[in-house]
Length: 535
Image (cartoon, rainbow, N blue to C red; front, side, top):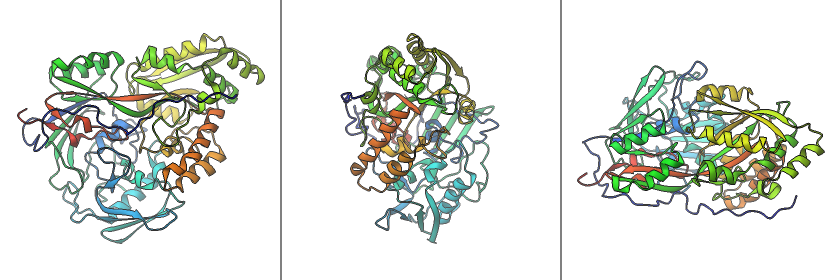
């Protein structure tokens, strides 16, 4: 099927601030009231996932946003841009031309928040601990390319990789590579509970109701040594049941900033709230939403069924009718704006077409209507997810080719557990990048030990696209491999991309630094927030 490729606007200069906050940040936030950030994150301990704030388990944007201010990594993403900069490290770099040996020299005088010294041995312990625990729904895959870690001295750490990987510095900047105190964290099992001991710019105290987090109280860490300049001595993170109550708190002045799970109606309302002392900033985003398929499920194991769904889905209607243009249609796993992006799904399927979908099913001798269920989580991506899945149900069913039911799951952790155990045929997920590179939109989803635990495998993607692109230090040179992977995914449809979200930050005008609150991976940087002069 030859079709003209659709061109979407690129995210030129990811997360360049759209609007400057008022006031100066010099000395802002020292003493006085804390900066209060609202979130609808549901962070909870359950039997099969008892350690939501252990880096070996935590692998969702909400938990990582809680961890980042208190746990230090060797490298970090800067205010803007994609290239990692030193954090606990003084310097890092590859020491060979094959991108297989990576060496870091650490800052002197590093300490954990409990006063224990932090050395290269703690880095080695933390990496080996992640690999040993190997939690099924954790971020271990980001570090699985490490063969061994050596510590020639207390200030030097050397990573030997199994295969060349030009993205390895980016992976060291993720919470998966957080440096932990070997005197506190067990080396071979998860650290249950909610305490966090780290060396980041803040210490943190977690408050909870039962096994669910309700507040995180951050205090400037006097032992911190790193590249971050903290703008406020105290920051609190309040956890709300829904975005409506969170918005009410912002308007009342009970919180100073919020950014996730806002409905389109809220975004439109906040755009007109400047006279209420609130500013809404729109930023380019690389969040994606997609449907994932358990390709072993007998109903959808035939790729013709998945292709027919790809032929029917109307992304433009989703973006228009459900999300009120707070996102863009997405025709690939790799979002627009990243090197290597191509609109593979549009090239293959074009606009929604019932006749073409019927032909695909007829040629594969698939009886219709195909009965299946779309499953989604109610408490992770916002209340509007239910409306999105109702729209998807209508799109598939009105074709007459499908008989789709939808099912919402109340608890995110339970949803993730059942999803990875293959209990759902088709389910909705979102993805915030661990690091801003096309590799992180392909490698986590394909191959052995993938993030979703989907059974789909493809030798060309695993051996040619992923391995080949990681050999390219010049990421522009890796584009061909990424395009190969996207075209194969569009053909086999183990995953069906839906839309790419924009990012919004709503803040009271007494707060400075909200334009820097999100980095190029849409991760929260609370240390950038402060008070304006005289506010």
